[in-house]
Image (cartoon, rainbow, N blue to C red; front, side, top):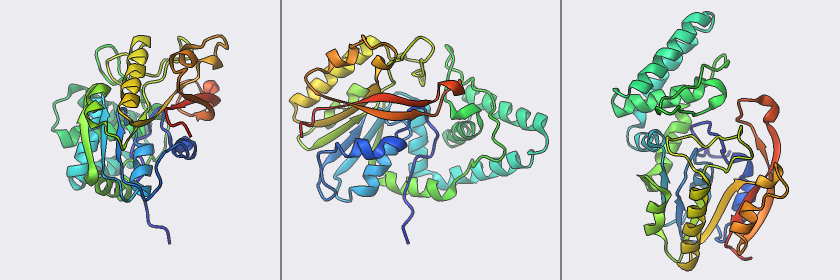
Length: 298
């Protein structure tokens, strides 16, 4: 019987579960190798958990993200998982009890959303609010307005799994070997060593003006940031680190747009098919090319 393995505890735009096989096939290390694994933009952690589940000899892992709510969620699950489960299980039962009363159900959701935006709760409760909203809001989106207030409406899920006790405990156990930091991606440069592997999954460059899904924090990841990230990859390359980077293929919208082809021209650029599932417009979900760029010259 297969032992249960940790998996992402959130639904997250750009989550890489569907692309794990392609991404990890570009890893330069074998399962028995020792190396340091670094994710400067951890998101839901799909690749992180795959690494932790499959590389038993990994020396250490470091995760970072600019989204403070997200990083605090990782920290709380690592250190206070039982307290978190207690709250989430209580809220799940309360939410399920409102299944046949849509008005009360909406009221319950928006009360939790208001509490989250007030930011007066202790950190464990705030993380519980963060997870609750992720599981019950429309399409699992995380979106904030210009005032950094979460503004996604209630979703149509009848009985979403708000408290996955088994997975939260598995995640907590996996995170014991992970250092968790918060801030700009360049903070992770200090972990660059000869046997370091960086997986970079930044906010994607929008294909057009209406597809901007990179507002997961109040900072915008524009073209200037994309260029700064490329220079960061150059530094990693000079230090002898291996890295793999995901991003949108802007040529999907405009075949003459060679922004990434030009920016990363000295590296290996692969185009891979990916399904976009999180989108406020269901018609815009479907298969699209994404880029997988690496300095691993096989």
